[in-house]
Image 1 (cartoon, rainbow, N blue to C red):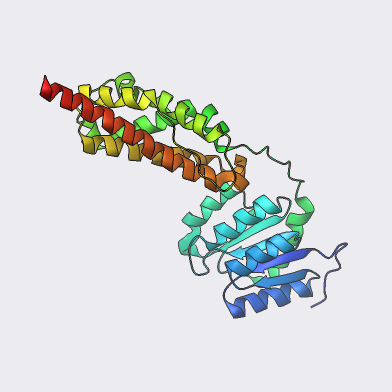
Image 2: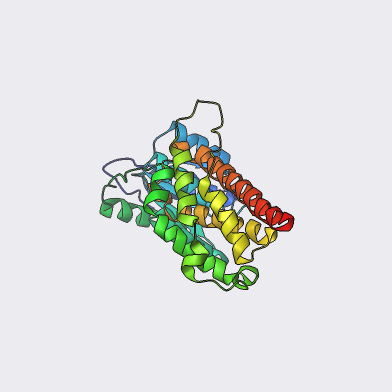
Length: 284
């Protein structure tokens, strides 16, 4: 075979845990004029992404975990957004691989494929690729604020799917109740200034207290309150997942920890209010 002369020697990060496949793909790509750096696992790949610059990423989906390919693509997208990203997936994984669209993978290569055509595909994609326009990044608080109505809608859908909670006959307005105010309190805490290295403190929530009293009057049980709160956490994290491309990843972990802690704190305050109403009724 005659090597193709490329105007620039594009640098490729190739990630695959299969030694024979990795070697064959490396030889083919190098023969076509590419500069190839190979990694056999996610740890190696992430280290290379943080220390070297690449024009292209080619990664297998399973190495051996289903999320491995996604982890590599996510890291490359956030640290080197202009790199061309290609995900290699077997036929049984095609459905899972479609999730790569959410991570903005440029191409999904389905196994088996002809290795000799891989270089041509990469070259064509590089020639036709347009520069990536940087997406403004937001803190979790900002995303939750402008998505509050969507969070409430999504939460309501999930609640109605719960046989346990749907047993209580309520209008949508009665069911959502203090939820927007609870989300508002969460946003306030997320925006509170923190001392580096120290956890932020939970805040007293009048909405959580009122929420407990309201749920008691509506016929909820303590178990239903816990279920209600769990669905809120799932809904919040689901909304963040839908907005991954807009998230500021440098602060994502502490914000996620704050969400979990604040929702738990609100549940504690709700349960205390719920119990106090019940005890007052008994004494009376």
